[in-house]
Length: 347
Image (cartoon, rainbow, N blue to C red):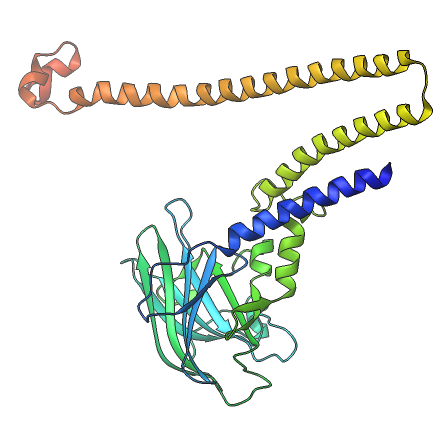
């Protein structure tokens, strides 16, 4: 019986993981395409997109974009390549970073990410990289939609460090920066920020990374760490927690029915069990109705004060903007108007 329960859980998790993967795989990429990029893919974290063109074995065009919104606007975005032969990582990355300016544009510069950066030292723009040549680099902002950086890179002829069939690339997003000195501040240490690395085959568009595996593992289970309420993975945890609870209850109920059938007791046991299940079902249904009713009532109650304040502001607005003529005719202290105040002062 235990095997039946395990099989039901595994099938449920597999189907859910497959649906999430499909929804990500076929999402459209950014419409910003100044370099006529022909290859594009969604990256695994931070809502980022990466596009590229291959001109030769060592020259590529890249386009890196993130979505932006009015509530949480990124201050800087970064993309870079890393020559580490084992795995992509932040330290050692040759990065291109765009920092948002007060006038709404992006200032794009080159940065060498060293171990000092991880220790919290200031990250300043670099003149040039020792190996990678950046021919062109620009930034683009589409208000309340996308923020993008694009560039043309010439990689050194060293297949062990830079290879378009297994290119180590790193990306990041931050919400604090010194736009005067073009200094990006430390980014968040949330799971998405930690997982923003990948080894990508530019010819097949297939990416492999430890972060990619961790990403899907946190999404088929989402149980190991129990994300906080502000974490992006919390919604997956809530869905699984709720769904698995009902799935386990159903599996347990079926398991008990099977046990009764095997033991073949008096029919009284079967009807007693059905009666107990019916009572529990009515209790669960009542609690669900109560929970939804409470949720709807709370939502309406929270909206009511906002609507009342808005109505009061609209009602008072005409009185707040009246010329000295009509205002001087009203009752109370306002009826005296500015002229009456001058008369009192003169007296």
